Image (cartoon, rainbow, N blue to C red; front, side, top):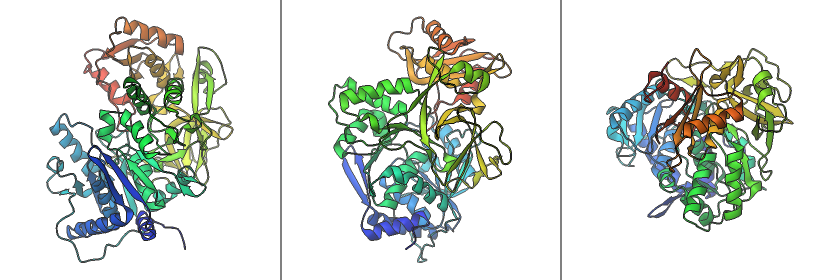
Length: 544
């Protein structure tokens, strides 16, 4: 028998075997959704969508928190032959009018005919598309058509989407190819590992790593509501112990927040069951992350060999590279001077250096090239030469949708916009090409300024931003006050630490109140947005 070619085929096969279960860990207690029940509920919801006029190829959104209804709605859309559009939702809606306008933009960019939503949120959507995701209403007598491998499965908005959001159009075949990429991590000797997650389903990590694998492999997956993690990050670690989870992945800053929260409560938590505890979705300062996880190892039994860092992007569905399970986090210390002057990641020691973390290897059928210039049939640079990361393989998107959507492909290769280098088959990501900081004609990475600033005790972790003032070589560093009473002289201390670490003195260091520096849904700082706010004077200073 040939393997499933679409997400729906995989779900039906899993349900027929009687395997696969989603376990939601709510404060009031666990709620379970088997794949057999999922088929029944999603098929009914699909017939309801057909009765509402949804046809194969239409785009249908889903808006709401991580709940069983979100999973049912997603599979109902696929069973109806439509494309899922996961719609972003903030943890707290501070300005309903602004969020309502944002929703209009996302619905329009995704081309949504309808949006299945948490009943509490339907009033924020345009009235002609909003449908409560409660499973009632008229059902069509037609048999849901399903979809072909080439049909659109997901329109995934990229994390950098702002005023004019663009979505990555992902076919069923690309999703299933990505599942093949993930298989070596999820399985141990042919048996799927138990997972635990809290990342939102509207993000590619939540959807493709936490929702879909359960239906494909029939594994037992545990789901902590994102808002429950946000209220108490240590609850994530408690659930690792309670479920004996073997896989949990999240941004490094989330691991840091959870470990600190557990330390404050002086809890004894056992993390020894973990075989995979990977950093994802954001750049990693390996020195800070390493210290955090060393504490987790000492206090909570976190296995150091489970640690690793990965590389992925929405345009490749999810994962591109990740480490061999059990190999631990591999590091490479390189010269900042050589990096800035010659774009070479030369091994180095001393203060003027940067510790890089490996993202692991890129396995066939995915291909990677590091190039100096993205042209047709580009040649790869040698090891340790930094260039743009290009990708080719079956788990790439078909293209972007949305107004003014660019074409990022050259001769079949996807231009990622990321800069990186290879060493002995492993990929290291240095930063984003568009975010480069230029001083005296040399290229510096904003992460170097940001991570140096973050090591000052009075700076709030993960809330630092560095950029050039457009049209100049002036470097601005924005930091948030950690609120620990040590802010006196903070601007001067940040300037000193950054200058010593990078060799470039910032033109200005601006200390901002907590909550000022914006982040994307995946935890990345919004450099462009913060730069624009600084230039406009919206931060209470700066300007051009």
